[in-house]
Image 1: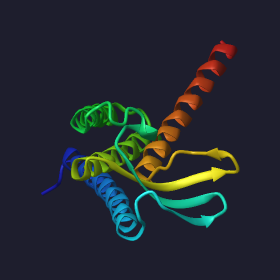
Image 2: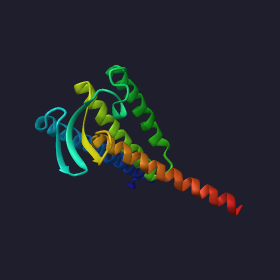
Image 3: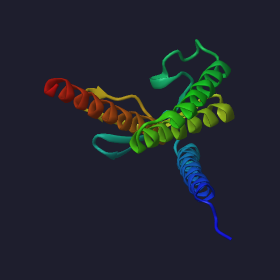
Length: 173
């Protein structure tokens, strides 16, 4: 009995979906474990210098990115908005035109879900990576924020690549 090509394609597609889901779970676990290590070992609002430009800290972020709207928007609204955005991004992965775009969206999903879980469990997001140089300071962040940023850069890369391609086609036309 011969297995049809459609069945093989479906199994391969589901296998890739399972691998992507597994990667999202691993990324979320790394973020979760890192936050638990910081919570258990570093006092709130204290700093541990690793190198002159990098501190590990323990900060509770009650707002959105960089603490914006802290104390203004209730946590449950931030959670609902986050879940809505994640749902839209999951849909966008089904429409992604390239592998890089799809992986960029998957990294963003992993980071967003990790921070949503943190907010659901604690009513805040724990940030602990603190970069600075002389009088220049970047707000503290966590691994989930890195995933979101990395995913956004992947999508930006594709956007710029496609834009350049369209410009080149217009010039040669």
